[in-house]
Image 1 (tube, rainbow, N blue to C red):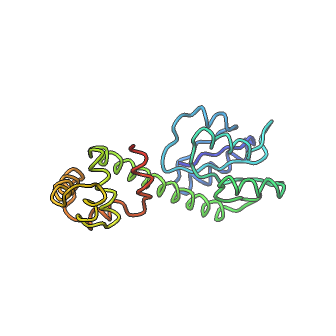
Image 2 (image 1 turned 90 degrees about the vertical axis):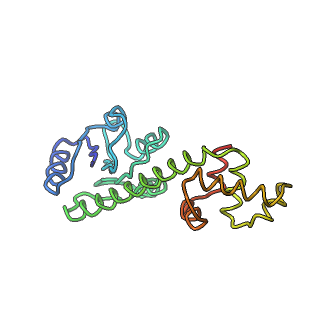
Length: 205
């Protein structure tokens, strides 16, 4: 889904026509307020946001979206932006800055990049949520054993850290693998691939 936010009706119509001709679903709005009232945005999505809006700045609107937890990629559009606005926009995480008038090829390339980025974000968040749900099945001691397993510590070192017998740790490791529905350490490593596992475990405490 492509969300177009521009107070110029003719610009909204032109963008909608070009985007729909390329096969994209489009929702065109005259202000960011309409976008924020829309509720949860479709995923994957990208926002085409005009910098010069009636009574407000698109850069300020973007900051407000972020403060409300909206993480959809934003592409700015403008014909007369100041350098400080461009710098601030990129510091806020803008994906691109299209200077009007831009051509359809430039527009579609930016939109494609934004949709790909949002799709990747959705996949990361879904994966993190699934991991969190599975780890929630572990007892506090099993989570600690799991954390040390991910770090590659053998049973005897985990036992020494916990002040328990290696045999007890062996049973705890088996329980961890069973609850996480995995059969080997390689699968455990893959489960945490790309994750900050210290942060993951901290979120469960």
